[in-house]
Structure formats: structure tokens, C-alpha cells
Image 1 (cartoon, helix red, strand yellow):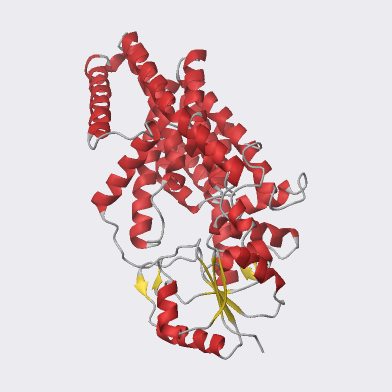
Image 2: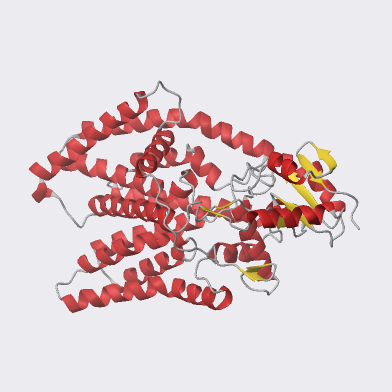
Length: 491
């Protein structure tokens, strides 16, 4: 991970918030950016970034070292989970780890300054600890698992998706028959899990008047399209190769049908032989339940709170990890219970074939990141003519741009985002758009501000370059390879 990120971790718009918040924390200004409290993102990842500066006093390089460390932790947790659930079999664990390491998804995920690697760490630790609690309930395991989930919730808000399943699991598997004792254990889980999040939400309400900077607006996501996206992401992860239309879904559909048939046979003929408190059974059940809960919560969130949420590999990475572990442990348990080792060896052969298709993409991705970088730390942005020009401007110049985040990150200068045509989170049209555009154009035409439009940034909810030119008839101050600067000599 350190070798493939010589320019530092990749920086995206979200990353600029994490890094900016970490910088604010280190300067004693709290969890804020430019004096404004941050509520859209939880604070734990920026706190870890700030702590990492004790070892690497550079907030551009700190995410690189932190995510490299988290990559090692996550591989270790992944190996531990498979080892504990697949009969402590070394060969199985080795195959699973190679399956993880051969995935370009996880290499890329840990190469960006994102909160997902830390979220996976806490979520993975939580599932392992909860499995151990279900098998042998103790107060220490209950406390440890609850705190792990609590930390996951203040790393990414979507961790709330795990809470209902967690409470049900703790209640039904507490190892005691008394209702009062079960309720007591569930209450401990609820309090310890929610305490960090409740404290954060109260702080957000007091500081900014909003719990998470999201509002309730109905904008239902197309269910069929959502399911298709999930399936496509899963298939691309397992076998990132080009095949004729329909071949890959058909093949994996038959494979899934075969595995489901084996599970049905297991339940019909060997129900009494199943040890419901073994790791090989508990782990796949929990992984499946948490994955389903996550997917449902994500759909609800997109439909009611944040329509701009993308359904991509980044967002789905936690459940991809869970499902891999769940499938490995489930196939092992089925083959052992049915006494059909051929099922297991066929599965291992399939994994070997999948790894062989994944390795070339992983190598290409690693080499590309190592050579060019990612996001705002890549070579294109480091050599940007527009950025170089902005660095020469005085601090008091008013700037409008379609990329204020990249300007702030690379130049340290504050700028204003172009007027939005549509609110990306609610999908509602901006009723003040025309007035805001007129005010911005007036500022620029009267030489009180500049407009910098980057070609490398595409944001569908902002006006295009052509729309701005036709609306305002702005004078071009400078044309660069990566964008245009509009305006005149400032007063």
C-alpha cells in the first residue's frame, strides 16, 4: 500500500472534508472547516487522521500511512474470520486471503483518503466479537462488540443499518431463558452502541441546528435499477472480465442455484446435525443478515434522505467483505455436514479461477496508482496550469468555481461553488438559481470576482461551461489545458 501511493492517498471531495476537519482539530478549532461545524460526516476518521500526524506530520501523507495500517488490520481480520469459521483450515484461509488481496476494489479502497477502511475494521471486529458472544455469551464480549459497533456508527452513519439486527441477535442468543436477563443484555448493547452517536448528534444539533445535514424528502429510487446495480457490482467483483451479454449472469446464477440446493438438502436431511452455535453456522447467518439490512437501509436512505448517494463498489465494500466470509464459512459447513468434500473442492477451484481473473486487474490498478496517483493528488492536478495561476492570486480575490474543494486543498484559498441547478441530495430544483447566476455574473463582469471552470470536474447538478458562457457572455481571462478562467483585471 505504501509503495503504490508515493504521491499520498487519493483525495476526493469527501477526502478534502476529512483532511480539512483533521487540520481544524489539530489547530484547536474542533470538528469544523473554515469555522463551520461539520455535521454531514462523522468525526472518527478525521480524529484518526489527526492522531496519525504524531507519526507523520503531514496531513496529505497521514491518510496514506493510516490506510496502509488499516489494510493490514483488515486483511488480518478477514483471515481470522475465515480461519475460525472454516474448521481452522490453513489452506482455506490462504485461498480466502489471496481472494481478498487479488481484488482491485480493496487496493483502490485503501488507496483513497476515505473512511471506509476504518469502518470495515470496526464492523469486521464487531461481527467476529458478536459471533463469539453468540457461541459463548459473556459480559466482556457483549461490551467489546457493542463498543466496536458504536465506533463504526461514528465512522460512517450508515452503520446504523446494523443496529436492528444486532439488538435482535443479542436478545435471542443471550444464553439465558429469563426475559428480564435478555432485555438487560439488549439494553446494555443499545446504550453502549448508541452512546457515541447520540453524543455526536446532540453536538451537531447545538452547533449547526442539524443532526446529519440531511433532510427528509421523498425521492424513491427505482427498485429494479437498484437491484441490477447490486448484481452488476457483485459480478464485476467476482470476475472482472468481459463476456458476451448474459453469459456471466447465467453462469453465476447456475452456481448460486447449486449452492442454494445444497443448503436446502442440508436443512431437509441434516437439520438435527446442525450445531447452531458453531462459528461455521453463526458467521454466515450474521453476515447475511447484516448485508441484507445494509442494502435495505441504503435503499431507504437514497429514497428519503440523500438521493446523491452513489450505488458503487466504495459504498458496498463492507458487505462485499462480509459476504465473502459468509460464503466461505457456509460452503465449508455444508460440505462437512453433508460429508461431501467434492462440494468444497469445487468451490476452491472456482475461487482459484476467480483469483486468476482478478489478478491482472489488480496489478494494472496498482501500477496505475503508483505511476499517476489518485484524485486531487494525481499528476494531472499537481501539474495543473489553472491551479498554478490561482496560487499567484492574492488572498482577497473572490473566486467562483465548479471545484472549490480542489482549490482549497491544493492552494489553501477559499472559493465559492457555482449556483446549483438542482439540490443533489433532495433532487429538487433550486428556485433561486437564476437570481444567483445573475449575481455571480454581475460580480465577474464588474471585475469584482473571477470564475474558474475545471474540465476535469464533472458535476451534473451545476451549470455546464457552455450554459455559463451563453448566459453570462463572460470574457475569457485565460485558457488552460485543464480549464478556463473568466473575468477581467480585478479592481
